[in-house]
Length: 277
Image 1 (tube, rainbow, N blue to C red):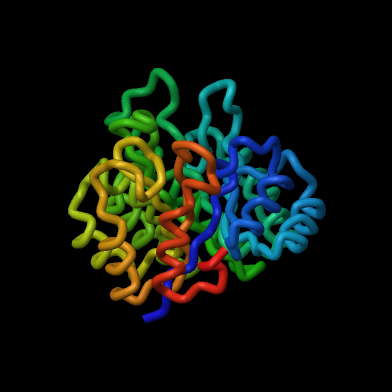
Image 2: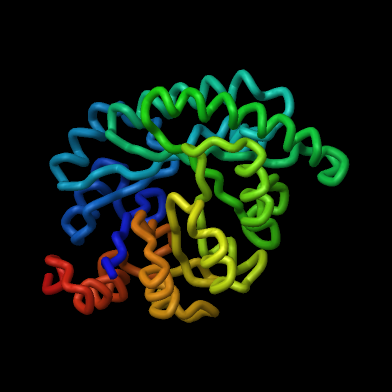
């Protein structure tokens, strides 16, 4: 069984460093071969591509733009009346993905609009999401890119988020029926919403294109105190034949590099070339 491949999420790791360019360099120096970032749009894509190359990293995931965050938006894919803005954001994400050589884009569903009744608007939001996803699948296919759907928990992190369980996301993917749209499995969110991780991983892994990890409930390193047994979960992903990347999307509990001891231990067991550093 092949060892897992890990990606540094630079929206979360190395918060002591001021910007993406410095964080790319730090990730490469820490032994990562891949990185991901939610919203790279503050930097020119050419500068990011050059910094990633100099750091020995490949970019493996970015998100579509969030929309108007001052108005509380966090993605636009399922938001009624924002279809044009979603498609504009998708075009921007595709431009960045092409410049960065990044094969995956998280198509953010977004939040239930402020003041709306979630139960009353759910069907309308799903209709909008399906329409936008079909459009996105066509755009992405032209560039040989993959779109990802990520459920985000509504119990702790984002109570208004539209897409919050793997079951909901899988049902939407089935309705769209496009092979270049897949599921993004953030184990932190899945544990909070549903638990049953062994069963859910085995059930949904065939349609998973990317994995992310953080401890529950504190969202710290996998080795920090919490509910999840990551050595078991990593072994399960290996046993089930997962070949994609595992994104380190967690909040460092101290110095980022010191907090990577869990990853160095994994690399040491699995023969990673950076294990001794």
